Image (cartoon, rainbow, N blue to C red; front, top):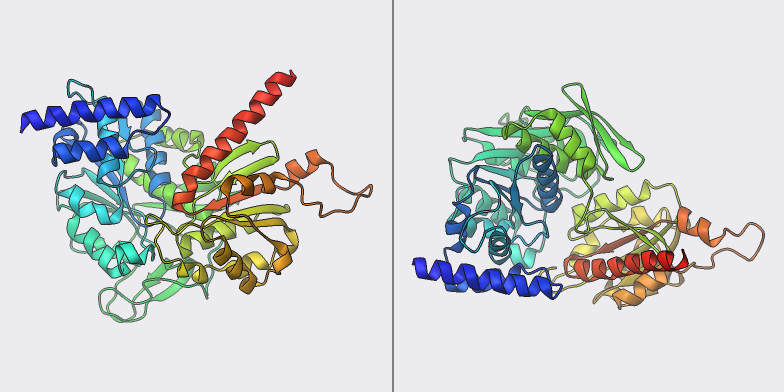
Length: 473
C-alpha cells in the first residue's frame, strides 16, 4: 500500500512538473495517473492538512466562492491549498493535491479548500470528511450528465457526513431543505437585492415545497427560485440566516452591502456574485476569521478563471464570463443589460461532454431581455461548435439575421469583435477609435469547453498589446 502511494506521488509530481514546464496546467492528467496507481490517493494526501478540508459545491458559483474564500483566508495569513483552476472532479482534485504536497509527502499548506462537482461529491466524501461544506444553489444543469435535479440534490444530501458543518443558502429552498434534521447548520441570504420583485415570471426550480408538495408562497423573488418563501400548508420557510446582507446596492463595477450594519464591498458585477461573497463570508466566519480580514479579502479579490474576468485588448476592454445553464445565463444577461453603454457581444456555444451534449437549454434562456436592448448592441457574434444554433435562438428572440455574425472559430470571432462595426457614417459625429474602445465594452460569453481556449486567446491578445506599447515607448 505504501509503495503504491509513493509511486503515485512521485509519478504524479514529475508529470505535473513536466506539464507546467511545457506551459500546461498539469492537474487532470497527473491526477488521473496517480489515482490509477493508488485509488485512495485523495484520502492519503487530504488527511495531512492540519486544519482540515473545506468544500464548495452546488450548480453555480463554485469557482468564484472558492476563490473568494481563498482570498479571505490568505488575507488572514492562512496557508491554503486549493483547486484554483476549477478542476473539480476526482482527477483534478488529486492533481491539485499533488501540486500542494512535497516529494517527501508533506503538505505545503494547513487548509485544503476544494470546489467539488456535485456528481463527484459522493466519491470524494468516501475519501475525506470535510470540516465545512458550502452549498451555493441548485439549478438545472447538464441533464444528460447529472440527470434530473432531484437526483443531484439527493446525491449531495446523502453524501455529506453528519460530522461536517454545513453552510447553506437560505434563499434557495432546494438548498435550505438539506439542513432539515441536522445540527451545525449555518445559513446565509439577502433580505433584498436590486432585482427583487413581488411577482416573477422567471422560470424557477423548486416551485413546490420539498416537505409536503404544496406550492411555495413568496413575499419577494430575488432570481430563479431564490427569495423569501414559505409553505402555507406545512410551515416550511426560509431559515433565519446566520449571515444576512442588507442595504444591497449595485454600484459601478461592484456591489456594496451591510452585514450587522457594517459596510462591505465586492468588486464584482452581478447580484449572483453577492451570494458567492456571502457563502465565502459565512465559511470564513466559521473559521474564526476577523471581519476586517473578510472585508479586506473581498475588496482585494481579483476575478479570474473566466468569471467576470476583465481584459484590456487592442480593441478595447472585454469581460469574459462563463455561461452554462439557463439561470446563470439569465443573471449574466441582466448584468450586461444594466450597463448603460453600447455593447459588443460574443457568445460561444460548444456541446462537448463537459458542456452537456444537449443544448436545448438555450431555449430556456431569456434572450428576449437582450433583444429589448438591441439598439444598444453594436455587434453580436455567435461562435463555437453550435454557433448556428445560438444564432437561431437569437433570431427567435427578436434579432434580425443581418444583425448577427456567424464565426465558428474562436480566434477569428475575437478579432471580429474588436473591429469597429462601422455603425456610424463618416461624419463629424462619428466616434474616434479611442472613444469606441472606451465606450463600447465587449462581453464574451463561452460555455465550459470554450472558456479556457477563449481565455488563452485573450491572454495572448493582452500580451501583444503590452508588447506593442513597450515597443512604441
